[in-house]
Length: 429
Image (cartoon, rainbow, N blue to C red; front, side, top):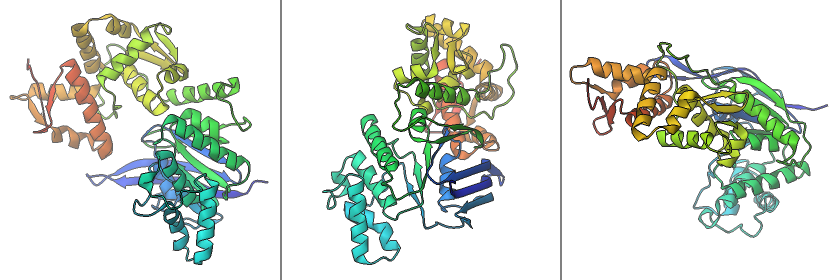
């Protein structure tokens, strides 16, 4: 019978807002990690996955709920829980050996044991011979291997991995994943369970025994998917591809349907994806052209364009929001308006984009209306920033205002001056 390493019940995480209120980041998280499993936390940016990992590591106290590790509440960093970060997080003035030894020195172990265990960890992750090298002498993949060695050297029961391969190039990431899985499958890693935060759907299917899908704003676990494929897994296996497709369907099903044509948009507090108008144009042109002819399977077009889910979903969300595409069942299909946009010349494209922006993005229409109502047709950024911060976090406000500004500039709806931080109408009517 599998042994429970970690139990999380009703976890809730909030952060204070400027107006004295609270921003809800995680809500009602229920999670259990048992011995012998790799569990993936999969979701879009902003779903609170990394925040959850920090809470499990004891680096922050949750606002509500409980985290229990081997029957004991996690109230501070717990011995037996180690983390590998997205960044390499190495001390540049220390050698590979000295970086790996740090965790053991904190435990107060004898110097002989510290050195023996550090050398064994370095050898295990494939860096034997680089003990005296400094981080600046290593490639990105080698530096991340040092990060793994530093986490493994303390012989943790649970290894937390926060997008550990995302900062690496594709080939290096694939090699490191493969090496990790081989060591895990062969029982050579001194760990009993793994929690992996990722936004890469194929990575989750490749590595994990269970995948927990997170919603965004706030982060909630909306679905659990068991991966019953044997290791090593083949990306070309039809069962592998079917599971990837299933996850794409589940994740895109959460995207809100755009308002119907002619509907009056009233809400301005939607977080807008950070995507340029040029990227939107390029993607919809690709979708309209052969071999897709206006309709594509999301995993297929993502692979062709070398886009991970965290790159693809903001594009599809923005195009769907503007009613230029429809997304359903893991497929993306161009709308009639989208076809008109692709076939139009530069000026007509701007006109179509302007019409869609003002019809389907309430914040754009709101900013334009405020500017039109002012005698000088000018308003400070703070006027809209403060208004949005009542509904979303600081970073989300910045992202949303940057997005609406970029789209409005392309559509010639309004202008923004970064030096004075003011919005204005270039050609007030």
